[in-house]
Length: 269
Image 1 (tube, rainbow, N blue to C red):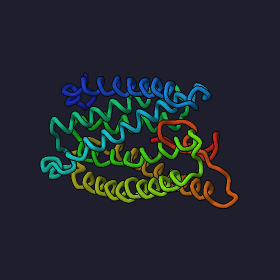
Image 2 (cartoon, helix red, strand yellow; image 1 turned 45 degrees about the vertical axis):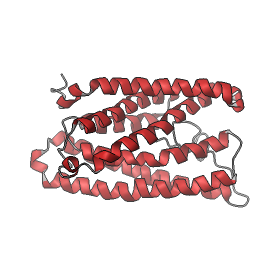
Image 3 (cartoon, helix red, strand yellow; image 1 turned 180 degrees about the vertical axis):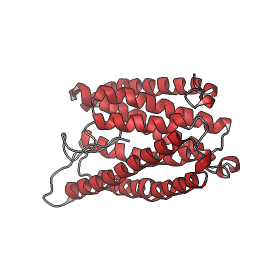
Image 4 (cartoon, helix red, strand yellow; image 1 turned 120 degrees about the vertical axis):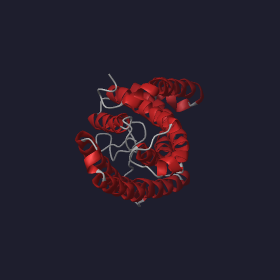
């Protein structure tokens, strides 16, 4: 069946995908269990905020783990010299871990009930699902480096929930967040997106049309979201720390994001 879907190599990694999805949910439950016992504010929160906190706990760990695991792929000569079609067992396992995370992400996004988060999760899922042809596993490792901004995004949100809004800790973290987000998602993200488009153009006749369409459109959507989210983040930080400005609440829902108001634009990694 996997071969008919165009992802035959997933047969070698489906156990890793399943184990990954289960592991992220167990970490989510662990985060909620620990918070119930050690964070005094936790008991005063409603169900959705408690769930949000657990999601952020998992996404914080996910960002650190998957970025660390992906780095060796970027410097592996076998992958670097064959960025479109390169494959190793290690690269497949790392992409399977990432795929498992986004399966879990879709599940919790459905529970949170935000269409934007669901679309983001589904888009990322397709990116890492289709790479098991194999196709662009190298770029999968590149684009997961977007997650370098997630820990800082979550710390910013947690400062709000733990009564540290407007503190020096939040200010310094916010500056680091903007720098890392801009470099990882805008500068590096756009550079490698263009490189991917050029690589696909150069080997257009060898690539199935559905992969060209899928990765071209998904890449455009995700880059547009990154640019939009960065604008909202800059505006939110400016308003938060400007004299007489309104306090902007980062991440009222989602696993690692921000919002300019509870019903406003919200972003999640």
